[in-house]
Length: 337
Ligand code: GYE
Image (cartoon, rainbow, N blue to C red; front, side, top):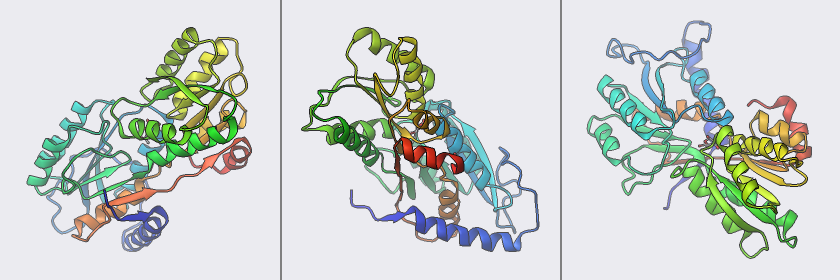
């Protein structure tokens, strides 16, 4: 796909200007949390409030909690939004239902983070027919028709997987490492892309993925799957977990089996949320590739432009860093999430 890209820094700068301009003409208000309201109550006549419906994936991880907070803290009445927020509990049918109810409410914009990649065309077509623009955040959809959404804001998950794999190869190639992989939610963009990126990066090395199963991005399932791996194999050298939470679950399983995580079995994860970074600082995780969850400001910016009928970038790529133990110790005190 040939898509134009726009980096987060630029967007953040633009959105800061937009928010400042808005703040300057709104009356002082204490910034409370966004309320799930019935959207544009008076039909939006006169005032410029943007009614936005947001369908969140769920509350499966620390990353998701930080992402929800960023969205709710940014799409406030003070910033010119009337936010309807819903949590789909990791179920596509719940997201489809939420999107349909936003269409029925007649919101100005719909935003969502699609739990899985496929199966969205019919509901997105309904939004399009109703004239309601859609913005994707965090995860992509797999659709032939990219007129079904205005913009997709989120990280490059293939690159994240590659960064994890490159570090693994750099550290451990030549040692015949046996790797187990804890995959994210089956069919989700980050699970598909991180798996692909990691596999590509370790190609041609002697690191071998001996098993790969989903832990659904949760700590509980990550632990259960790791327990299964530990029963099945007695020579696991490295865990690649598609997020911190599953890596933290794996730590519990490894410790329960009488081994030392980070030493007997190395661990690489993705996200770099607080709990993960703490485990990295403590030496229980060896390396973390960041996935920035603070998408609220970019979403606010794009939503305003879309409603104003302005042209927006089709793809906004969020930049991510990576951390080893030393970098985690340094970053932790000022970490926002
Ligand atoms: O890595 C994981 C969350 O879609 C990038 O979803 C997101 C992923 C994140 O559950 O922790």
